[in-house]
Image (cartoon, rainbow, N blue to C red; front, side, top):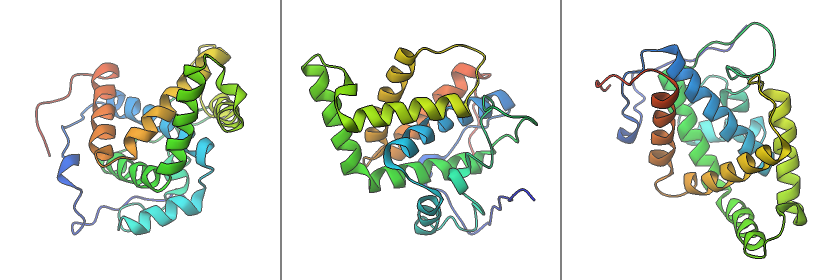
Length: 206
């Protein structure tokens, strides 16, 4: 039985997550795809598992909102590009908002490790060396590339160089999401994805 998401009236999302009305499935699918990439990056970098997500849900008082956050809902609601049969159930807006809070909470918990990885990336770039020369970045890039190829299927062939670029871009993004303004930054990044890949966002807020 597929876990359900409940929306108790007593829970209130932060004001920063006030959202425009997203009336088209394409918009939420674009957001889900971006969240998938962020989660793949975070999980392959930090090794976070189901217990980590469950702890975040409890810490954020989202227990009544997210009933089963395994894989931070990624495994429960696979991306539109995810391999497999049967399609997917689109995320609803409260699931998206919950994921934003969970991602930023976990990124903050792992901020020092993320900062270390970004620092190594800056060093190899200054030295004009490959990130594969450092064990941490090499392991992360390889794990990300493998997870991407297993989980995602956009119909296009993506080169190892492109996967490396994507992995490193997402790594830098994670550092920003781990900061004090991380929730706002991630939220507006997702809304931009909805505007680019979906229909125009309705000028109405909830």
